[in-house]
Amino acid sequence: MELAGTLAMPSFETSGNDLLGYVAGIGVVLGVLALIIVGGRMIHANFTGDPWIAARGMADLPYIVLALVLIVASGSLTAMLFQGSYHDPEEDVSASIQELVQRQTREERESTECGQRALRTDNGNYICPDDDGYEELNHTVPLSGPDDPRCTFDGAEDCYDYCFVRTFGAFSNPPSGPCTPDDEDLMEASNWSFAPYHCPNLNSAWWGDRGKACKDNPLDDPGDIPEEYLDGRFLPHENEQRYYACTQYPQWVRSNQDKREVYINFCPSDDD
Image (cartoon, rainbow, N blue to C red; front, side, top):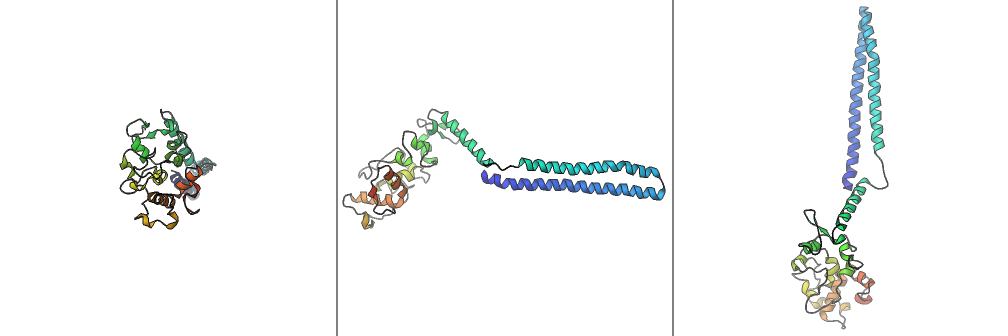
């Protein structure tokens, strides 16, 4: 919308200037023709000696002059009005419109039972977590960022906090959390909204057919793990998962380290 407004303003100004130019040009042409006609009557009256022709020409002259003045004045006035209507506020008009739309959207969501957790369907209605179809929307509608209301509604600080699973490295079943959909097919789509916040929690059982929205597992087999990640305190699959999180999702590591959910030396290098 902002780009459209930026492109439309020069086009509007150009069209307005062209219109004023056409009006002024037509006025000048008509004025010149009128003066030629009056001048011709004067010359004709001079040769014929008919004073009435000259009188009629002189009678038309004030109207011609008045018409020219009105044309020039109207053009100048219109240009002045256009210039006065063009202003450069501190905030762009398109940004103001976008802010108004966002505020209206927030108000509509807050009017529902679940407030900011409500999601908008294709038909414009808002649904809450207990409604049918919410889970699919929850995992396909893009998040506005780590601080999306869907992540912070229950006291969590952000999506990293909300999606973190404390059973990291579970050997049997893949860890499940609030960001993991009950329908595993939702994890295969590239629009899985919680992927950046939850993929590092998924153990190797979820790196194959399931969780395709996650970045590919960088390992063909555990033997490919760099030596600095081979820590005897952890099981092989835990070292593999740690390497995966450090190399593919360093922001997840840093954010959860700040919350003391991941220990400081989780990654061997400070650069990860």
